[in-house]
Image (cartoon, rainbow, N blue to C red; front, side):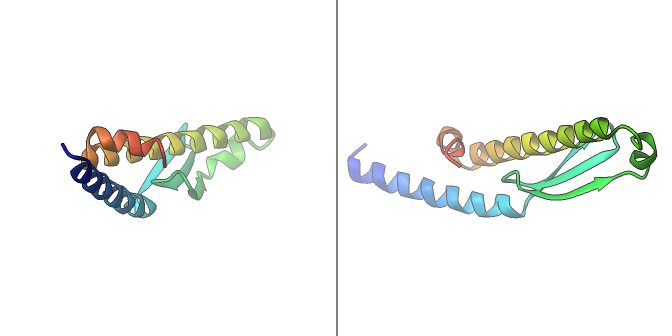
Length: 105
């Protein structure tokens, strides 16, 4: 493969990766913790919403540390799912190149 063709392919991959990044901005995932806390994040892992079930207020009324742990677990779950979504989208669209580019974003 000559250098010019290689550069052209790299530019195509870069453009496709940018399009995927834009799509990830609008895609969402939901992380959960014990069914009591839900955290919604976009495909980049940016937290968009936190939802608590009413039982949280009674179950953790005197256990602030337990509630903080639930929130942390749900946030980490959402971010893990966002990362997996990003890698999946990159791999689906770009194959092996997508996995390399996914690590850059």
